[in-house]
Amino acid sequence: MTYTTLTEAQQEQWAIDGYLVLKNVLSKKKVQTLIREINRLYRKHVTRNAHPANGMDRRNLLPDSDVFIQLMDHPALFDLILHLMGPYIQLSMAEAIVRVPNPDFKGYIHTDGGPAMRHIRVTETSWPLQIKIQYFLTDVTGPNQGNFTLFPGSHLRPFPEGDKPITPDTPGAIQLNANAGDAAIFAHSLWHGVSPNHSKRARKTLIYCYSQMCFRPFDFQNQPPEILDKCTPRQRRLLGDVGENARAAAYFYSPRDQAELMAGQKPKRRKRKAAG
Ligand SMILES: O=C(O)CCC(=O)C(=O)O
Image (cartoon, rainbow, N blue to C red; front, side):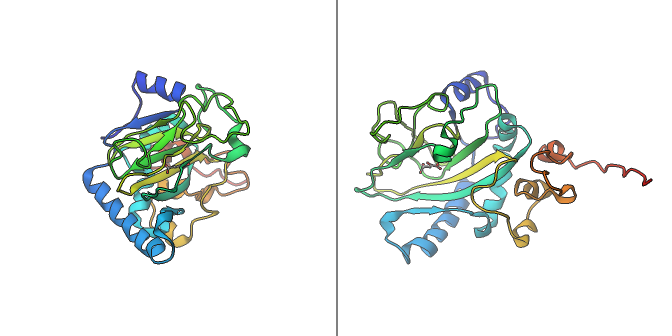
């Protein structure tokens, strides 16, 4: 299913709760392809080198497979991202997560950016500073299965920050259920994290994070030319290539073709001013 905008009810939930769950965003075939790639990365980077009970948090995924490059502006959600954030955005992070069954893992809760960004809470009429999309690639159908866990509404108000850490058991926590192919979108200041996984199955997801262009990306400084060469002009821009617009401050005063490029339109050729 392709999402381009939000219904009134979704808009209200986004504003009040700070997150949304969108159903059937990825096809079964796409889910299978992505799972295959994640399993390959798991075999390569975890099973042989570490204790499997650690699961996997693999960042900066784009060099790992072209399917991860394609997902950065996948038609199912990209128009919705533009609707929520405006066109002056970049990709900040692409991460594969495997939460394996582990009786000792208690889960954790945090806000993105930690104390540095925790106290910045934009209002509901503002573009977000950052959003993350969590793509679910396995079903999570009951509690304590490595569920994405969040505190609705916590993005807008100071959350008690006492001596007691905030955990998946803190009152107000919701453990989301989701099916493979669904996605959750959430704001940076929402308290969120993961529940323990007491099931028999690993939970597999992907996180794609978008931020306003004036931020530094989370996962990388720059993408190397061999990755940029595989990208469309829009994808290159999402990775920080401002092309012929390159100049100091191009990330603050965005290139003139930014909105049309993000909308998928071919940038118009602008006439050069005659010299003199
Ligand atoms: O669902 C998870 O595994 C946690 C993801 C998370 O907390 C994050 O991406 O910031």
